[in-house]
Amino acid sequence: MVTFLSGGTGTPKLLDGAGAAFSPEETTIVANTGDDIELGGLFVSPDVDTVLFQGGGILDRDTWWGIAGDTHRTNSALMDIAAAADLPEGPQYLPAEKQTASRDLANWRRFSGVAEFMTIGDRDRAVHLTRTSLLDQGDTLSEATAKLADAFGLSVDLLPMSDDPVASLIHTPEGMMHFQEYWVGHRGEPTVETVEFRGSSMAQPAPGVLEALEDTVVIGPSNPVTSIGPMLALPGFADALAQTTVVAVSPFLGDEAFSGPAGDLMEAVNAEPSTEGLAAAYPFADAYVIDTNDDAEFDRPTIQTDIRIDDEADAERVIRAIAEAIDIVN
Image 1 (cartoon, rainbow, N blue to C red):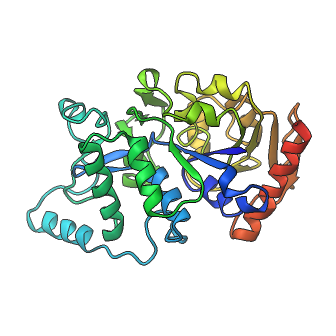
Image 2 (cartoon, rainbow, N blue to C red):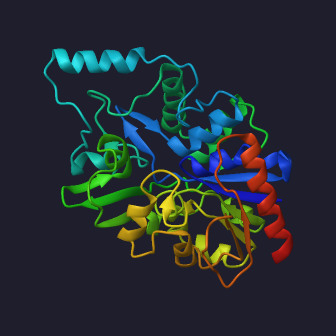
Image 3 (cartoon, helix red, strand yellow):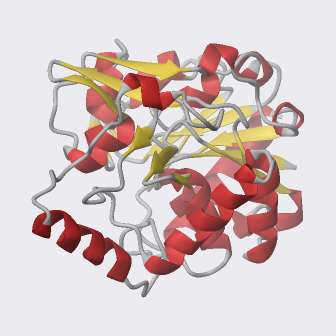
């Protein structure tokens, strides 16, 4: 049995090769929900959706988000209306008093749908409409996710990290921003002063998550701060990892991140923005998988391979290295 901690695009790319060592029936994926937002009244769970679409065979593998071949007529119409009405463009974070109004799950992550700043496809939007309606009908996020996983025919178990609201907030000289506003709306350009996982201290791991952490855990090459950090901020989560076997795959080639703002975010939380910084980010890790050309050193077993993942064959190679690391520490 193995559990993958997944966020962003790094771990989903790795999951393409999971079958090289792990059967789907024995695989659980815990997805980050710190990136979740409400956009125009729809509940969007990007890291959950990437795994849903990947497992359903419809993921857009050029972007690693959204549905392949999706149309964007609604998004285009929203932009046209905003322009015609001379409405503002870009991320429009709703005011503080609106952040916690109405649904409990809406907590410091609510955005206007005017001039929709995240491009959501039409079929993709149908998923968000369904999820939002299930939540409105009384389902928890876990229950809604399970129903969507059945709809997409997933053969692995997919769990959101929590049913409770956690918002990854980026503090910058320009003010506080939700991670989606920082990364999508501002392309990661603002200077990061610190990162906050608002709501994490009051949230609980979703049903089944702590049990899944009793199995061997693989932390894929996701952003340690905003993809994995929200999970580690949940009560009991890091403690559970300290009690089980954990293998971490580096999201860095030396001091260069594969993609995204991992380096800037690591610096903001006073961690070295490199492979060696994983020792501080994941002190509970029992082994690491790093690149062949990486000279990082750890006081724990380290397997080296080419960890760049461009296709399924690459993913299978890294998965086999993970399996080797697991064998060593067990």
